[in-house]
Every structure is written in structure tokens, then in C-alpha cells.
Image (tube, rainbow over all chains, first blue to last red; front, top):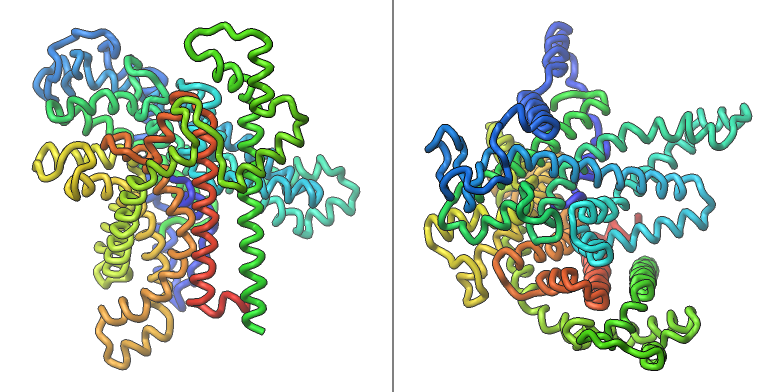
Length: 305
Length: 314
């Protein structure tokens, strides 16, 4: 639900001290072992690949119509009928098909909101990191103000101004998470700006925009990608929450959050209607986070702990 | 000397807090101003009335919309300083009254959640950090990762499924008695507990390698004593600095939790205001939450300057 801990995820951890005096063979074996990706990472990436397939070509996974009512009896429990492997919902629609077709909405929300946040955050961060002291303090004080407001409440403000709906919810989540990216880009910009190679580049007469393009941006990209990867998971969760409280995708559409909210009244009739979409959202956010952490370890040049 | 430094540090912090509030007030002024044209209209066009130009002008004068912008801005700040957050479009009551009326439910929920989250995080963190059996730490950090990945409403629904529908221990919704408070409190507390436990464990693993821990063990202190009496005190400091963030998570989580369990509170108020496009109320809740955030951060700052004297000299 929150991005704050993810920010600390994206920051580099202090490197652990190398083990004192081991045999060379042992350290080579350890090196090999550390190169091998973890089981969790492999599972997470495999699950994400499956999700991407479901989002791009849901027809490959299910032939059932996610919207047509009366495809079967309502509240059919999972694994009772080969036609409806995960059973049916209150209107007799195939649950598996609705879950598969709902993938696209979630991934769009996660990627779209993150794209907005990354773009806005990069612009603001560069403005703060490279501008005059006045622009810097203006931008950073603005970021401070926005950080004082919980992101879900901020998303609600945006929804109150724009209206409820899929795209508005996406914009709301994106705007609400801009400050985290802005802070990171500014910090990164400061580090690069003070480095000797930028000093050298400036001394060689490279223009300001060339310095930004060649040195500042490339150096900010890696940590930005790590933060974006982990932030995508968070955005999917917040987006589903907005749909759940009725401010995102609207009910007949197969979207996980709104599927859950329509299932609440029937929670005592059919546990699967609540448990399965809930598990799917959790697995999705979890996989994105695990993959993001692997990316982070990789970008810091060490794998495994 | 030390007192002077302390006062200066706290003075700066207070000033920064005032700055944040001023920024929030300015942002909300422009939000309100941008939608104020609708305000004049919606005030008079309640039941499909067709207001004449004269009536509209009257309303604009009443709301001060005919003044120059800077005058409206200073008037607005003046009203805020007097604790006047304006009037809700929908409910026709002062925003402060609307907030005050809903505060109790949320405070009850959030206070319980803080206690539960702290007890869980400290218990799990202290008992699982740096164990000889590696799987203990791995299992609990895996569990924390799963919990932290679950949106609040999913946690709430799963708790409902198991403890309300399955076991029948707690009511599904409502606000009567302690029993109806248990599931919402845990719904709000679990994700926070997961994050706090993660931070606490990684901190404890560093602290437990410090020489003073070895000294304590050498003196014959038992493992539990070392963990709870020595290590925990050091590891709690980063947790304290997260208080502001925790308040934010609780307020954000309250929107979802109150909606799911059908409880009255600030979250529910904010949600209704958003759905009704009741901008003054939405903005009022935001100003209120940023005030809470600023005050909590300030209090925490004072508290740990007093607890940890090193902070001032840094």
C-alpha cells in the first residue's frame, strides 16, 4: 500500500565485508553460487511473464467471455466443472476468464501510473538538482508538502478534481507518487554534479544540456529503474484499492479491485470470489517487488546475500 | 550551551513544519479558487434553479470572489489561522465540525492499530533476528514481504473470510463494542507491522554484532535479556523516525478499512466527499492530515532529542 519502504529498498545498502582469508576454490564456488539467480526471483519473473501473456493475449489462456452473464450457474465453486475451472461469479460469469481478462487493467495501471510518476519526478528532480537555488528550494518544499499527505488521500484529491474512472485513477496514482521519484533524481543529480568527470566535461567546454544528456541522465537511470520497478507493484496495489472503493474501474469490467468490491456482499456464499482475486493481486504485487529487488541487487553488482 | 542548541534545532524544525502547512494552505487555496466558480453556482442552483446575474453577483460578493486574488488569498490564510476551514457544499456544515464529528472513530481505530503493529513488529523482529537456525529469519521475512505486498483491503477481506465467515468469532461490519473493532484494527495494523518488523530486523542484525552485545553475553546474560534489554533499545531509533510515515499509512489505510467494515470515520468522510466532489471538505481533510503529520513529526523530534543526546551534537 505504501511506497515509502520501497524507497529505502531502492537506496544502496552498505556492502558487507568480504569473508576473511578463504581458500580460492571456495570463493570461486561462492561466486558461481552468487551468480545463480534465486529460486524466488525465477518464480517471480515466470509469474510476471504469465501475466504479460494474459494481458496481451487473454485468448491464449481462456476461451470464455468475461462479460457474458449466464455462461453457467451462479456461485459455482472452483474445480467442480471442467467448463468453469475456477467456478463462476454471482452472475454466472466464468471466474478464471474474468481474472485473466483483468490482468491488463492492473498492468496498465501499474505501468501507466509509474510512467507518469517517473516523467514528472525526473523533470522536477532535474529542475531542483540543476536549477538555481531558488528553484531548488521551491521544488523541494513543494515535494515536502506533498509528502506530508498520504498517497491514497492525495489520489482521492485528484479523483475529486478529475472525476472517477480508470484513466483518472491512473493519473491520480501517478501524480501522488511523483515526489518519491523527484527526491531520488535530485539526490542522484547532486552526486553526479559534484563528480570529477562532470567538472572535466565542463572544463572541456561541454554545454549544460550535453552534460545533462551524457552524464546526469545516464547515471540517474539505474536507480530510477529500480525505484520504478518496485513502485509499479505499489501502483498496482493502490490502483486496485481505488477500484475497490468505487473510484476506478466500474463493475461489469473485469478488474480485480472492482471484482472484489462486488464480491463483498456475497462473501458468506462463495469464498472463492474473494480469495482468488485477492490472492492474484497479492501475487502480482509480490512478484513485481521480488523482481524489483533482484534488479536492485543486480544493479549494485552483488547477487544473493 | 546544549539547551541553546536544542532550542535552535527545535526552532528550525518548527519553522519547517510551519512552511509545510503554509504550502499545503496555498495549494488548497488554488484548488478551491480553481473550482470556486462552481461554488457560486452550486450555492444557488440547488434545486435546478436558474439564478439571475444579479443573484450570482451577490453570491460572488458574499464569498469574496470579487476581491483581487492576493486579497482573497490573505483572507483565506486569515480564516485558516482562526481554524475556519470553510463550509462543506454537500453537508452545509463547517468543515471543522464535519471532521471533529468523525475523528473519534478513526482515532479509536488508529490507536489500536499502532499498539498492535508495534507489539507484533517488536515481538517478531526481536525473536527472529539473527537466529542460529537461519530458516526462522527467512520464514518471517518472507511472511512480512507477503503481508507488505497485500493491499489493505485484501488483508481485511481475508481476515473477514477466516475469522468472521469461517470461524464466526467477529461481526462482519458495524461499530458496536470491542468485538467489532478487532478485525478493522488488525486490517490496519498488519501491513504496518510487516514494514516495521522488516526495518527492525535489519537494524537488530547490525546491533547484535556490536561489541557491547558480546560483552553482555560474556557477563553471562541470557539471549532474551540481550535482545530485549540491550539490542532493542538501539534498534528502536529508526522505528521512531518512521512515525510520520506510519501516521500517513494509517490515515490512507483508514479510507479502505472504514469503507470495507462500514465504519464511521475520517476515511469514510474523505471518501464520501471525493465521490460528491465536495472540494472544501476534501481540501479540509487534507489540511487536517498534513497538520497531524507535521505535529507528529515535531513531537517525535522533541522526544528523541530528549532520549538520545547524541542527536543534538550531530
